[in-house]
Image (cartoon, rainbow, N blue to C red):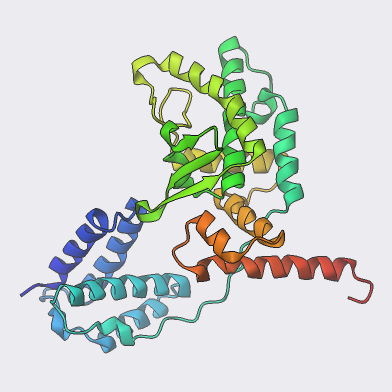
Length: 324
């Protein structure tokens, strides 16, 4: 008879090789499911059998998480992991019903994403164009060598293309780092994007992103010429050694310019994705089209941006209307 430990291992394997889940998702599920396994396995005793686990056991598990003052979002994530794993057990014929289905999710406060205004984004990008490479590289003085100066210049042009593409296309960071040269149709100004679970979609990019990319191509060529055989000739965005950029680097790029040019250390790459969707909605785009551009599986995920837009309109009303 299959044990809980065995089914957790099979489910994680299923997530990786069938669902094509991201490494981060798999790691989070692993942590949550193994925590539950430890809970139903008292020290020195055998774990509860799968068929002994009912909704009461799961409620007790969540109860002790609340006792440890875990945030509701963390508890909800762990319950979601259990629901998914037990749903897999039912589908595999190991269980007849999902015990987590009867456990209510914690009521979470609605979180409306903070959205950059078009003026803020334009100011950041315009100031990147006006600034010198030494200023935005974080150097307090000009680079001491020609090599360092050139590296700062290359980085500035590359980073401008990164920010333009994040905002023009509403890409996830993983989608940006995963872009290959074959993904870009320069004539049609379209991207072939692989989203979550390798779901494909086509996304247009605008005139400013096209200009930024055209400025970046000679930079990319120079980096690859330096790297020689070590260069990643498939990847669009490269580090100065010729390797594909990582998600951590993209995060640092966005935060650096937001801090230097907007004096805002809270922005992150997803802020540009939020702005992309919210600005489209505010200018009249329909939710279904935005859903397709963002690669959302569910329309309800896209609908979060309606709340952000309404909040912005109310803030403008409160500030501007004489009877507000």
